[in-house]
Each structure stands twice: as C-alpha cells, then as structure tokens.
Length: 197
Image (cartoon, rainbow, N blue to C red; front, side, top):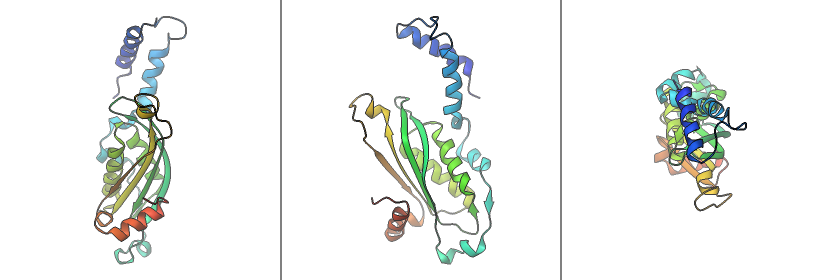
C-alpha cells in the first residue's frame, strides 16, 4: 500500500526546504492533497506485471479470426496515457500508446489493452520500460509472443528544465516474436499503427 501519511510528512518538509511556510493558508492542505494525488498517479506501483495481467485477463475465443495460419493482427492505436520519469519524477505527457499483436486462439478485450497501458504508466517509469511492460503483459494474457508497442510522448524533464526544448517528441518501439524477426511484418505493424518510422 502507498503510505499517504509518510508522503504528506515529506511533502511538508520539502515545502520547508524550499523556504516556504507550510502553515500558510494556501499550503495548509497541500501535503495531504499531494499524497492523495501520488496514490492515484502511482497506483501501478502496487502491482507487478503478472498481477496486472491477472487484473485484465478477460479474453474471447475467436477461432475464425485467430487461426495461426491466417496471420491476422489486432491493432489498437493512440491510447492516451501519462507517466512520471523515474530520473526526475517529472511528468511524461501527451503520450500515445499503440499496440499490435497476433492472436493465437483468443483475443483480449480491447478496453483491457487501454487499461493495461494506463496502469503501466502509473509507475515511476522510463518510456522504454513502459513499452516492454505492456508487451510482456499482453503476451502473458494472450499467450502470443508476437507483440509490438509504439509509444510517443513529451517529457517535462526536457521541456521545462534542463535543455528546455518544447515540443520535442520521444518515440520508442518494443517488438517481440515475429515482429522482431520479420522486417516486412514489422513494417506492416508500423503502417497499421499509423507511423512511418
């Protein structure tokens, strides 16, 4: 469980370290509000990838679509998420996740893909790891090794501090199974995910 009381205590200490007065009217409730916010935005830290897979493991057997020899693909694009960079605890925003997988015997509920992406983002993360975590969870649920994840987003650790370059997009890909080995299949996946990389 996330310890909101401890978070609130330390946020109060940060306010003091910043030279502000945590007892002034505008800041009195700030430590509690931040603690509550952290419980929400970091909710994914309470679960392993395996536990997230168990939360969202609802699948449907669709034999006519999922026969391995057909090679059909399922693609869900532009799922909006946000996360926090583990290096600076800075917001990663305007993030869009696209997922492609080749089903074998069953398909996962489409809303579950979005829920998985959202929960994985609710951790201290690296964008690269978000893609890897999503691919692992989708593979656990569908038992398909053929999974791809494309993520693009902006990082406030680049846009509001340091180099301060607004509008810079970071794109990362994770490809597993046939998508990793077969260049044509990977290109097809990227086209279906509406990205020419």
